[in-house]
Image (cartoon, rainbow, N blue to C red; front, side, top):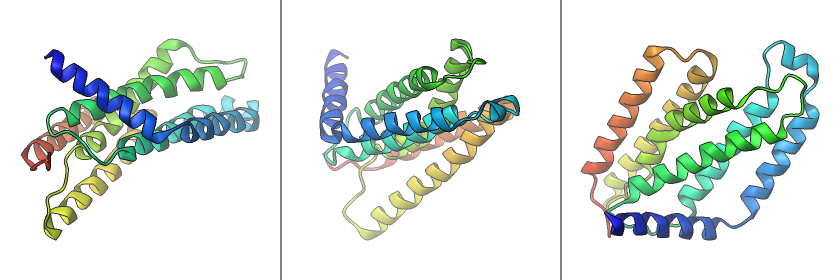
Length: 191
């Protein structure tokens, strides 16, 4: 088990170093612009531009981090992707809290629920990206199709979890993560 933790830590550090500072600075600027463009009128009607900007920026940085390093160990790739996802969920929740400048600022409990929703929405995509494609064209095409389907499903789950997180949405998210885990565990890894 300590070897797995060490491998996950090394993968996370390699991806953070490969991605560099540019995505983080772009998302910080994105949140800053969103916080200054959000009129207080929008907040009263339930439109939270800062939270939406944090989700969008968090997803962009997550994709950059997950795709930053092409070489991936076969053993702990899904766990490393989920660690990256968890870290990004926490960072986007903290970033949206810090960028929120309205007098009706939402508390940490709402931000924690938002981070959990972010985690549940994008877990299938993170797991699907953990599998390396085989050498054949059909294998690469099937991986691309599964990753695109997981991204589409994640975007639908993100909307559903942000607007009305009921039991069916939570169940759908859990089943999508389980399906992605089954698909990724059955795929051959190149390393």
